[in-house]
Each structure stands twice: as C-alpha cells, then as structure tokens.
Image 1 (cartoon, rainbow, N blue to C red):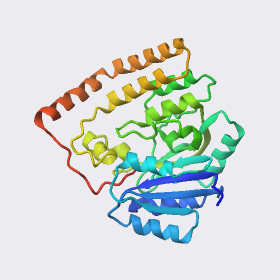
Image 2 (cartoon, rainbow, N blue to C red):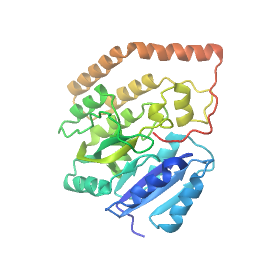
Image 3 (cartoon, rainbow, N blue to C red):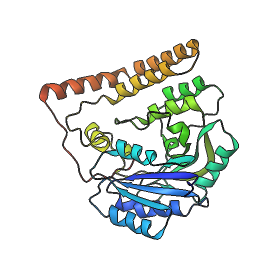
Image 4 (tube, rainbow, N blue to C red):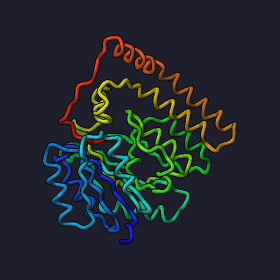
Length: 306
C-alpha cells in the first residue's frame, strides 16, 4: 500500500479520560491522507478498549500495545520510527486539533521546502475544555540564518507547542529524537532549528489542555523521571545540566562558521550563568540522593500526557 502523506503518532498511557475526544478531533480533519498510530504504553485503564474500538471502525487507525511500560521517551520515539510517510506529527492524548490543523500546516510545508515544521497557534483549555488565559510566545523562526534560529532556542524557555506540529520526517530522522529527561524538547528544537525553519500558522487550531495529570503541570523531579523512564528506578538525573550539555554538543557538531559557534557558546554560557542557582540545586539534590541512597517509587496510575 502507498504510504499516507502524514503519520500521526499518539503515545498514550492510562489516557482514558480525554483519549476519545482527542482521537475524534484527529479523525475529523479536513485533510484525510494520514495514518494515526496509537501506541499504548501498557495501560491499566480503558485505554486499550478505546484504541481498539477506533482501530476496528476506521482503517486510518493502527493500534499497538507495548509489552511493558517503556516510559514516555521511548514510546514517543517508537511512534516516530514506525512512520514511512513524508510528514510526521506527535499528538498527546489530551490535546485537541481544529478541523483544518493538518490542511493548513501541510499547505505551508508544501509551499516552502526550507521549512521543517509547521504548527498552529495554540489556545489553552482546562479539564472541561474552557479557555484559559495563558500567553504563548511561539516559535515562528523563519530567519535564513541557522545560528539565529538556534540562538532563539538557547535563550527562550516557554511552551514547546511547536513539537506537536507537522514535521518533515526526513528532518526529524536526522535528530536525536526525544531524550529521557525533563525539558528535552529544547534539545530537539535546537537540532531541528539548524536543519530548517519553523512556521506558526496564525489560526488558533491547536487546543492544548492543561490539567493535573499533564506532565507540564507536574514539575517535581521524581514524577518527571517516572514519566520518562519508569524502568530506571535508581537513576540520578540532572535535567538542566543534561539540556545544557546537549546544547553544547549541538553547537559543536553544527555546520557553522567558527564565529557563529563562539557566539552561540556565549549565549549558552550566559543562560547557564543566569540559571546557576537551579543548576547548583540539581547537583546538591543528586549528592543527597547518592549519600542517602534515595530511590524513586513508581506511580503506575499516571497518564502519559505532556
């Protein structure tokens, strides 16, 4: 069979609360040439039943259940590696898409080969779908200069809704994909920014849901580690250090003039200096964990939303 133009990877764990509404918003897209891959991370609620029901009634839906809970990072990456289409999009089990989301994004990508991502302006909603007053600066990066695009990624830390845009699969395959620490989105955006431009469709066609079970609303480190890598119970993690080191590697490996690399390194060091208290706090926390022998305790009921 000929591959669809878009593969939508929807990794999910115990997402029964919003999953049906999310899938409906995808299946109601005005652009219909897509495959929706539901990757169930060994859920213990009704997620399996919901996914199987949609796979049975719509040939555009493929349902796969992981044998064990592999964690959000591996599940997100697995969903991408299944794709054979020209474009790829991640979806979270609690967000919604306006009917023209795919059509508008693909029109933009088809019209400009220098773009690697097209995504839509976000509206934020609560548990009940009511609008929230949340500001999003966006990631409309259309500079012709890769170093300028990367500089923006290094010096900004707002919502990463762009990650849920439509991405050229070939470009995404050239990155390190999703890492297994909190805040890893910025590493991925840094790598993609060197490859091409980001375009924000001005229409608010992405409805991002903020609720108690979303990972963006749970910043406690143990929660985040259980979300990303539940199989690594004794893991020591320094997410801000990991992100900074990964950015340094991205700069070092970039095909850029030396003067641009030096400028980007200065920006990175400046950001680390501004966040030095938080970086020092991570080290202190890690040392306490080593000395006291603390380990994480699993939370099997969490839903893998973002």
